[in-house]
Image (cartoon, rainbow, N blue to C red; front, side, top):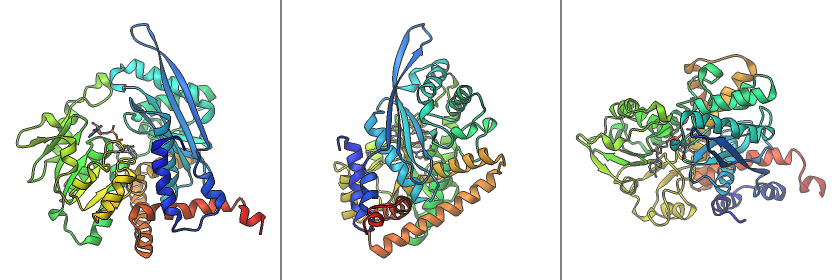
Length: 428
Ligand code: NAD
């Protein structure tokens, strides 16, 4: 295995394999992505120059259904990262029992440096390059870091132009007017909140007595922060890429949200305001400080590899809910486990996004559209049921929630692999 992130993910798989019987065929297959595509995307820039961007799409495993996973626009996107995220998507879809395999995509760039016109040309160019690799029954992309409904809409439109038929089910996270689902934009945060509330009940800790720090005040992080605030939790710190704010009495999350929204610079497509600009009555803190605050609950909701062997010893939170994908390295994980920290893993906690993406795909294919309340109810039923099942696996086998989530997902993946016949079937 050449890739470091993917090896890290594989270490987690190997650990889970100790607790569940999986055929050699399935475990061998799951070590490798099914197909990895690297493309170059030439884009005519506003000043007339031509710039070529590198893009990726990886389909990890499609045994349980067409592959599914987001598209990330970020300077750090590499094939290694995309393969690891596609691996996680495979386990996430299985963990919450969606009829999908895992995939991921990305383009290496700083999207904030592009104009709206350039971003649209780039998004359409990416679809031109990967059109034969995706499709409603093959691979269905969605938004991820620094991609949004507008970008998904451009991509769906471009795919429909290529296929000469309207194909809303090729991509999820679209604007409502283009076949998007009610509740998709907030689904990751809502799902994470539903899991957090269900799991925290087990520890008998009242919301008002529970302090929370959220790293990443973006699409997912700001929604969880807001729902926790509304439910009476003490959200004492939040941050974004510029840094964070802290207030021991609890932050006024609706004001922070309003502030970010009011400074939104539409020229740039992305929100340009930062939580740090709102300093009245708040202390500013760095992201490193936020992670090691003395709080009950820590919610990493920004990027991967934020908690490592270097800072895990200083983590004071007792419960960590991973809204970001892979925010804790496996070395960091071991230290937290020794300290007795409960880590609720990404493949469960942030599965609300892909679950409502699945609902969107179902609605696009059936032509029947659901209300936001119906989407929320279906999401709640699924998230809480799967969280409870993983909690039971964790208790029955006396293993951490992360390993339990992998065991739970592996049982479903094994079922799909063995249904096609494994060595045991052919040579017994
Ligand atoms: P987003 O772009 O809306 O928000 C990301 C936030 O993180 C921004 O506020 C940004 O300023 C902040 N950030 C970036 N670097 C940071 C750093 N070093 N320290 C602190 N904050 C930093 O993205 P999102 O959609 O909210 O996704 C966040 C995480 O959740 C990602 O790991 C993503 O893969 C994961 N996730 C998102 C979804 C979804 O549906 N949005 C679904 C599943 C998982």
